[in-house]
Image (cartoon, rainbow, N blue to C red; front, side, top):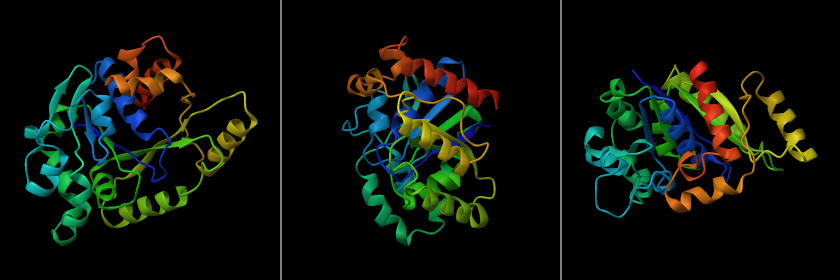
Length: 250
């Protein structure tokens, strides 16, 4: 049965999708059976895996709203399997309001294909709406990417409060897999200070691997490739391979 990890932070621009795409690809390269689930209406994880969002094929929206099975939606890619998103997911937030058991739709869908994978990585939207709640109800744990900038801790209390509520009422298994420091620059006092503050805020929960600011990481999505395929010798590729090893060793 797969370990299901949601990657969540309602603050945008923290490297959430970059982490989903490149961690999934790194786990795949490490010999693990991996499924990347894109639950963000922007569909950036789907683009990062080279998928065409506008080809009319079924997406996560069809699972959430039209009861299509996950097996019918999954696409094979060179970097691992993908359950893609579409912009229709934005409407799902409203359409789910009147649906019974709406918190567990994704969980129930993934349960049917979980035995086929070692890891399922879920890219959550940058919000705490119904799509993120569905993702957190389906997950065993959460990776929280945090950029090492001035507003790094903004909104983290809201995320942890939401996780605590879901853990109490909907998903008792849910825990923090780890906090991932992104856009880290050891040459600046700000990055070092933010890292120290986050480690104080989340004792023993911060990954030893940090993700640096890296031009090649920023370029890779425009080519529809994870960093390991775009430039396997880059610092970004090296760090995501280390992160994958750290998670596997857990």
